[in-house]
Image (tube, rainbow, N blue to C red; front, side):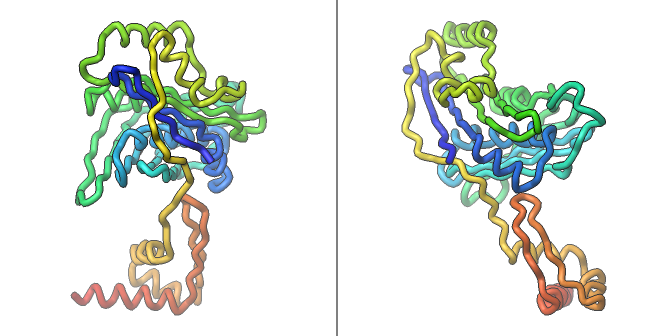
Length: 297
């Protein structure tokens, strides 16, 4: 099980979150039978959501929606402070014409937008922010969002290591957020560390590095310490049969009646977690009757 780690510079002007998310990204790939290129994008978005959510408060949630004009039209990832995370793309089995360049996400998303929604308890409408995609790199777009929407300077690094068959072997990430009032010499040092060390999340993890090893290259020469944070990461989907039943109402009375006449008993698979929901003929009739009653009011 993956654990989220949080750190801070000694003067609390740099806050850091880092995670080895290998287990949860492997579960994502297995559940959704995701091919190499999609899992690179969706996996990084998922790690990004985990890191952003860890900086929120209890019962708060963040959702990231990437939309583009490339082969992979969209990616959605959401996570909450408690460490529950899930993600999805409508193109889980996308494959390029060939893999001559290896497993690379470049050009898969194309030009588009990143929309971020932050949900808080007792808040009817979430806070929404949307920015143009500035890069094919998921991490760069998250950093751009933080700067444009929240005026937060940051370093975001996300990485997945795939084996020769395109199976996830390592996954993780780190985010450094620069707080107001920071000594600019600290910012200069972080920027110099990035240029000098050129850290690779996937390589560090693949070589047996710890979560703290993900942070060290960025904070070299800057004292920092771990903060107490007891959240672990789990792939969690809140789908229920009632929710799927409500979704079936979207089909409308005519389509439901057609299913009844053909005596169809559909099995609906949740695209997020792969859980099957089987509906008997009587249940389809109940859904149709519910629609009829609602239309009379």
